[in-house]
Length: 197
Image 1 (cartoon, rainbow, N blue to C red):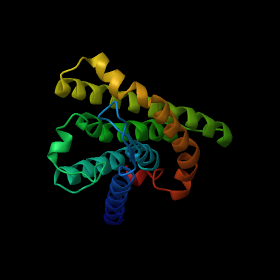
Image 2: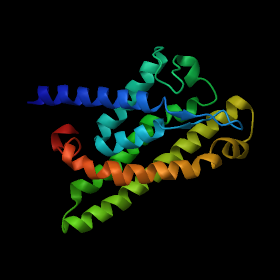
Image 3: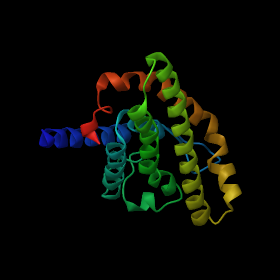
Image 4: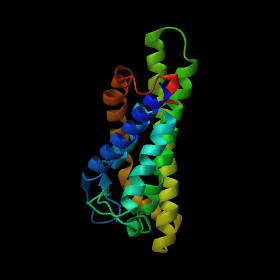
């Protein structure tokens, strides 16, 4: 049984690494910043919502390892260590941490959640939103520090260039993740099993 669960887990990890690679190709370059609008972040949200913390973390680690090995999985069909070592690399490196945080916020709440189902669902939405916001803040901090160091600009300048223009877009992605992805999580039964930790 455990062997089957391990195989299932590896499949989920691979599938969501692939989902991230696919959505990462949907990018909108902006003329005033080296950081494009990317749907790869939405893939990280989806991963965190649908997988347990361990699988969510590993799926994004696999995604980064594939990119480092040269597979064209990063935005714009880019690959190689040079992408991670570049100005936008910090935002990519933050992805496994983001997925883990989002997943942990939901998973830890579900384990102790009891009572009215409808009430619990509304609380889960709030909990998920909180996880998404904290995860995104972590991404902003890590990515901006990395960008500031490599671009030789101040942290505030990094925020102006690579964070402030994307806040509204990221909030829209959070809304999409909560209202379109969270409701299907239980139906897929990926996340709730104690054995998938």
